[in-house]
Length: 429
Image 1 (tube, one colour):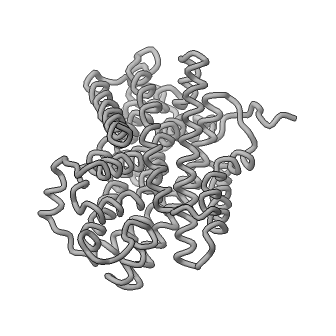
Image 2 (cartoon, one colour):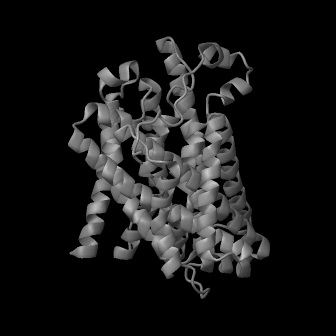
Image 3 (spheres, one colour):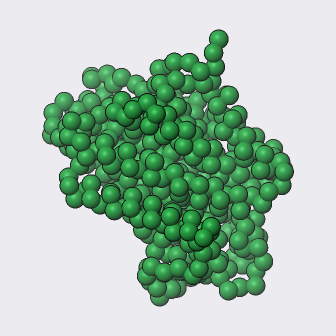
């Protein structure tokens, strides 16, 4: 029996028109009805506050103060545009981005996109597993390697909720996102941000190669390639729309979903950098370029409760993002190849780099930052096909991009590619 086999698409459910038509959903009330039309963006948003964000945002604030505020703001605005396009693609076509790439591109191109997507998935798992392991060590003094195994097991449990439908999975992930938000809201209340400093950070600038490296890491940690693929699968076939008007209604709710979820994630990312800039930039607190050092610094500066809130937020991030990453890996494999390897084997392969890093004692925070730089280089390979597909009327129908939308998305792709090329030139030339 081969390990690589054809399987039905994960998470693909055919809606029952009697239960999942737009009219039926709206009939459930003025509050419950609209709530049933949102949710996918909150799953995607977890990837924007994963442990890689902790590493890059706190390192950026501790090393350069408010200088990289503009990077976080710009990356979050880019994320809103990109995730909105991805969600619209699934809504308009009933297919995911990997499926559409397979359908419309030649086999060598599809295989190449799949290979790089798998590399990106490994970099994603590296950040998520390490982040969860660090949180478990901070909270319960569990060895890093054991913590990595526990984080991987939790990912299996979260993914298993998909068998009960997409809404239980969305509720749990949204709940973990709320834990992350509340943790940093508590810490931010204890810190008094400098409004002038935050405002000055909105002016784009760099302070040498190290700041560019962190900027690329922040970008890779914020605009995550694997959720560009995933979001299109989360919105497909949730609610049936019969008319063009109904499709437009669903698109409007999808945009609201993206703005609220990505806005929440953006506030969390900004809070990380602001806390680090206020407490650690220019201070004599040691090791604030590591997550463990940040935890110790928060405890010495703000108290045990603030450090506990940080660690709990990190744990929620590691668990939730690991589950979302596993789900996106399945979507990538099934979409590009229409095949799937057993979930246990796939998870073991994806976890291997992270467990090796933990086993040999590589600095976990540095591994997190490097993983985010790798993710930054993977963004164009997901973003460019997304733009090319959503601009085609024969694919998108009446939800095809307006010209201004395509131009804006193209500019975003150009900025990301230019930043990566500049980073390469600074590092190697």
